[in-house]
Image 1: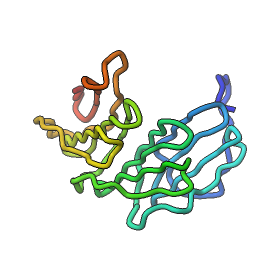
Image 2 (image 1 turned 90 degrees about the vertical axis):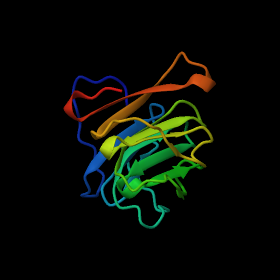
Image 3 (image 1 turned 120 degrees about the vertical axis):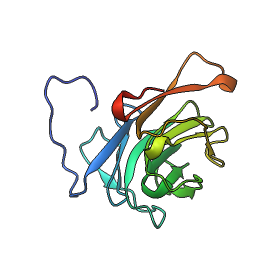
Image 4 (image 1 turned 180 degrees about the vertical axis):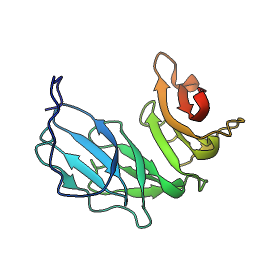
Length: 170
């Protein structure tokens, strides 16, 4: 299970891809993403990892995953790729990001509002679950590596913090 542990135990995945991000929704269920568009899912605390098969064509490299719950989630990666699932990862569909930048991190405030960051200071925001992603303005020309939404705000004023190259915090 994913509880607190004083030792780390290697879990077997039967793949050789580099893995870049993990998202855990409960003690049994988690997803990981990585190179070559790989997505793995466990429903037994990591004892077994199953490759998710229905990934959109052209998904070459995934850097980050965020699951809002056991069914709804998003992953982002190379060439502006954003993919989403509404059925726990059985099927993934592409969303239009409006950019070709490498996307490095995604975090959702709720099932509709979320943020994505990437190379060249790219910041995207959605307020409709990813049906539309808009580029957020700013002069952040340095790569952004990670984003997290902040709690304690209303849906209308959802906020995020991102970090990146050369000590950048926005």
